[in-house]
Structures are given as C-alpha cells and as structure tokens.
Length: 153
Image (cartoon, rainbow, N blue to C red; front, side, top):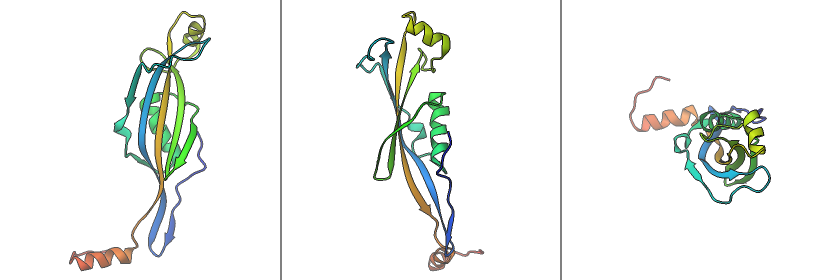
C-alpha cells in the first residue's frame, strides 16, 4: 500500500506542524458466505478491537498496516466510505476460515464446490486525520518562567 500523505514538518516561528493519524475505532462483523448467493444477513460473530484505539501514526499507510498486521493478517482492498469531522471511515471484506484466517487457493476452491464453509469478515476502521502543532520555544519558555520552573534550553 503506498500513501501520498507523508509526514509534513513545517517550521513557523519555532513551532512544528505535522500530520497525525490516530486510530479511532476498529471492528469486525462476520457473516456466513456462500459462493452462489448473498451472504447470510445474520451476524455470527463480532468484535471491537479496542487495543488499537488511540494509537498514533505518522501516515495513513502506517495506521492501516497496524490494523492489517494485528487483526486481519492480509492486505484487504480498503474502501473509504466517509470523511466527516476529521474521521476517515474505511471498510474491507475478507473471506476467512474457521479461525478468522484469510482464505486462499485450495480453501476457496473447496468452498466454491460446496465442500467447505467460509465467512465474510466485514472490517470497519475509523482513523482521525489531523495536524499537530508544537508550541514555539518562546511560548513554552515563557510558560516555564511564569511557573518558576528552571530550564536550560
């Protein structure tokens, strides 16, 4: 996955601004998949992955790679579905086996012949896309001086 959004450092009067991508939410709903008809509407399993929430990355690519390597173990075809109030919503569907591992090759062929059961794992990710600006040195030292905190920078 390549990303055109790279970290951007802008210096302005001693402050620095850079892009920040923070995971807001990660969830999955699993439905039984059928090769010759629509998937089951019934959610068989679902989970929120709270351990990644609030993790921060320098690029969108890094954030999605963290989700992929931690929970999906594959590189799905992500689709951006919404961007509102600084939160980008992405979705992907992965055909998986019994242990939520991605299905490949022989497993998919056996499923198509009706010899194996597979499921569609619907992943939904929310990523907060923002910029962070550090305080200018002079503003921070003034604050430290006001608080009578010694500093040597």
